[in-house]
Image 1 (cartoon, rainbow, N blue to C red):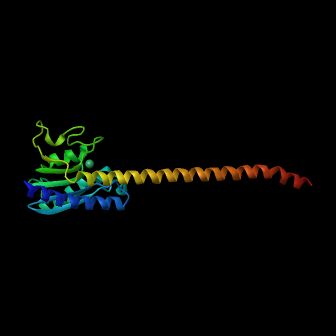
Image 2 (tube, rainbow, N blue to C red; image 1 turned 30 degrees about the horizontal axis):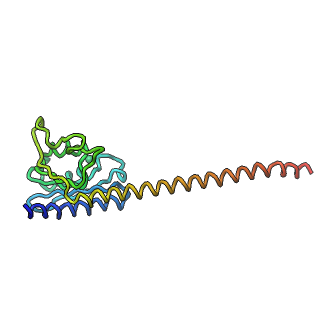
Image 3 (cartoon, rainbow, N blue to C red; image 1 turned 135 degrees about the horizontal axis):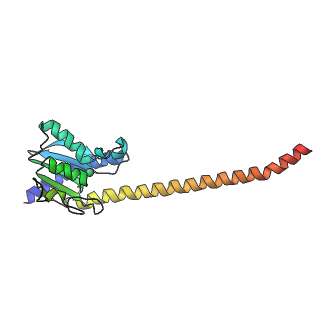
Length: 190
Ligand SMILES: [Zn+2]
């Protein structure tokens, strides 16, 4: 049992490494790896902003690569490690691909579909249910996200302040111009 847990941590570390790549290109840091027979066969990180499409979620990126390696749309006997609970689209794809096991870092109370809003991964009405493991390196995974959003908020605040500053300067200039005008006109008359 202990052995299995540390294996999970090891792979989650790799998913976190992938998330850092997303962060480096200014995307929300979410990373994913897919493991088959004890080996990482695919990696993915969120590129939604970079590629301007929701289809660039980390899980889908990794799944596409894994399908190429396995040579099938089915990803049976695969374990997916994700730093953040999957959305409805990715959870749907995971069930469709019949991924055996999913290991999640931190949960996403606002959009997660592995138990937070819905649990699409384990609905008995579908033909496939996923073995689910949550909370692996949870603190590190959620810290990475909250740090990212905090930095984003700070940057946006700064941008707004700069915008205000610029606006103020422009207004002052316009005012000066307006004040100048009559003088110039007077000069002309002279
Ligand atoms: Zn998704």
